[in-house]
Image (cartoon, rainbow, N blue to C red; front, side, top):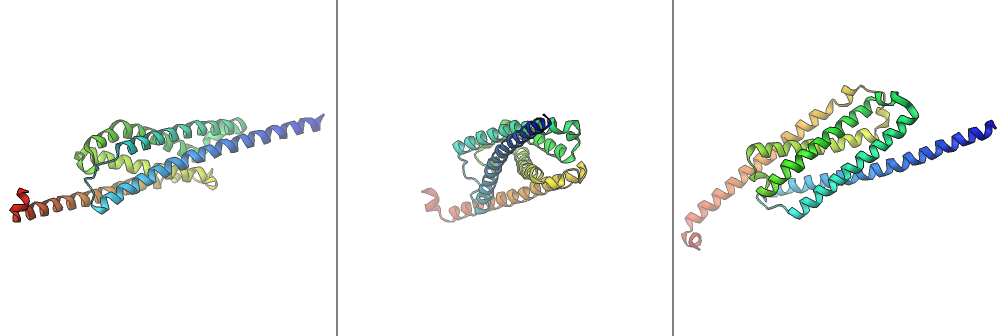
Length: 222
């Protein structure tokens, strides 16, 4: 009788472990999709600025597709993340929520969700209307840069916490998040410098073209 009970408990434990493994797998896939899209989008924007194509128009269809895919990935992350937390809570009880690594990850994902709502409700519509990052007003451009830096850093930081099992119970919440604001501010300042440089270069090129057209009145008339 006791052997049957033990075998039954072991079978249930194995089932829960396999269930958790499947949920974690889909959680990881959703995270990879979102990070890949955010990374490729950021790289494309930086390349555009470095190449001097600062005033180039954005592909609205691509931006809408990117926006929808990231939203779906974030929804999938929330669903699978809640499932993982529920499974672990069932096995460990309320003590599970005292893990600083879990608290840090949940906090970042919540912030990432609010930031995503800001991006999709204010930044992306303004960017579509302006056609270029450098054509935005100063306040909207700073908002776009900060929101973009927050998004990029948050995705990678949350992924690092997700795979960093050795970090669990080893460091405090403050220690785990110490680098987070530093990376956000650093990324924001780097993008501010890059956009300022690109804007100044674009202005200088326009002035040179205007001066060249003045020196060539026949071409200017044409």
